[in-house]
Each structure stands twice: as C-alpha cells, then as structure tokens.
Image (cartoon, rainbow, N blue to C red):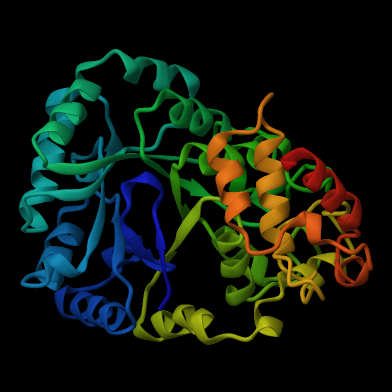
Length: 380
C-alpha cells in the first residue's frame, strides 16, 4: 500500500480507503472481517457518515483495541431521527449525534471532523455564523477533532470552503464522468439515467477546484470514484465504453491534491479487488487510452496528468511540470511555493529538447512542447 500526505493535516493516508456506507448490510462479525481485511492490506483511513446506530456500534467493535491504526473521518450533522438519517445543523441534534458517534466507535477523538454534506450556497452561508460552526471550532480547540474537513459534491461550495481557511481537507465526488458536469447543487442529478451534457472535457469549475486545493494545501479524499458503478457498464457510461475499477482509481489518484479514494467496500473480495490497484501495471491503470478511444471522446487538448507522455529522453517529469504550470497561471504572480516545487525538480521544462516524442504518446493531443516552452519562460 502506498500512502499520501493529506494536505496540511500532514496525515499519511492510504491511497485506497474504506467507505463504510455498505456496513449497514452486515452484522458485527461480518463487519469485523471486512475491517480486518482492510487492515491486513494496509488501508488506514475510513469514512463513516452514517447515523444508523448499528453501523456505528459494529464499526466501533471492529476497531476496538486497534484505534491507533485508523484515521477516522467522522461527520458532524448526520443525525438519526425517528429511525432514519436526517442532515441537521441544529446544534442540540448535531451535538447529540456526534457524541453518539464517539461513544459507539469507542473513541474520544476523531482525526477528521467533517462539516457534513454542504451542497447549497445558502447552507454554507448559514453555517459560517452559527453555533454549529462554533461547536466544531470548540471540538478542534479541545482536541476532540484533530482537523476540520467538509464533504460536498458541489465545486462552487468546495471552493468557498477552501478559500475560507476553515477546512484543512475536503471529501469530494471525483470520477471521469462527474468531472464533465457543471455545478450541480442536487446530488441526485449525478445519478440520472443519462447525463444531459456536452462532452467537452473537464468542467472548468472542477479543474479549478483541484488546482485551488493543491495551491492551498487542502487535501482531497474521494467519494463516488466509480460513479455508482455506471462507469463499469458501456451502456450506462457517458463515454460509451466501460472502465475498470483500477482505471477509475488511477483517474482519481492523478487529480491534483487527491490523497485517498474511499471505496464503498461490501465484501472481503472487494477489498482485495480495490487494493489490486497497488500492484497493477501501467497498462491496467491506463484510463487515458480508453477515454481517448471512446466513441464519445471528451478530453482533447487537456492534460489529465496521466503520465502517458513518458519516457522523456531528458527524464523530465512532464506531468508534474504541467501541473505546476497550471497552478502557477492561476495567479497574477507565481506563488513562491509553486516556484520552490519547480526549482526542486532535478530536471525541468528548460531541459526540453523539443523532440516531440511525448506528443506522439499523448492520447489527448496536448501540445506538450509548447507547454514546456511556456513553463520554462514562466518559471525563468
């Protein structure tokens, strides 16, 4: 298992994480088996947004005695009312639900305290000056939560949160299909039978969000990495082709600022299938060729940092140079942190000899030599 730094939390999280939502289907013993299988494979981060008491109790029993092995993403505002889940900003309700979370998971702290599920602007604005947010800040101050995060499906809201300075990480829905969608504040629209969109590549709002997170050192954990499974079915995929779980995981993990993909794991076999990403070869991970060859092609001219351009005769990390260039041009002046990252590269855009070999391998027809020239000039 490979581990990545989750932004400025400085937590080192496994590239594959446990999304615990399907644990509601399982009894305590099955839950223990699933969690043990995750531990054995090196998974160290789990997300539990569910308020259903049985799930929390079973999960607490599953990690009992091994709490220190897990980085827990726990949600504040996910409540259980009259036998069903209700999202709430009401302080007494949110507080009681979070105290229940701690008690059932048998822990006195949560690594990542999540502002739960914010997709509408009025919800975000209401949170900013509320006793709900005061409560979260107090939890952070006393160490009950170590870092503040937020879950959202809306890139506009995610951007506001990142720029606010309140959150240190976000949980965001990432996959090749959702990335083409414009701003949506109703999560159900992501799971319509068909996407009413023009396949024009990554939506600028989402592309900007990933770069903004990288720039502000706000880490991303991914939800909906498989688009609810629709990407595995050529008939339901907006591209007209099927992708594999490994290809979807690789797409997510090549987005700027992404540290971990939280997979909704239901069986021990699914744990093994997801962790197979870590030993997969480049051909198995290759989403770029599949998307580029799809009947409904979407990404012409856009660098997706997929790494297909390798190898470079000068050993330039082209994907990294492109990523730093894209981060740099977001601002009127190149941020000092981006400059330092660029300077730390053993070889950079200035070493490009313009051979064009990279362009013959790029599935998306990116003008790489031209971008190397621009990067060399910008960072000079």
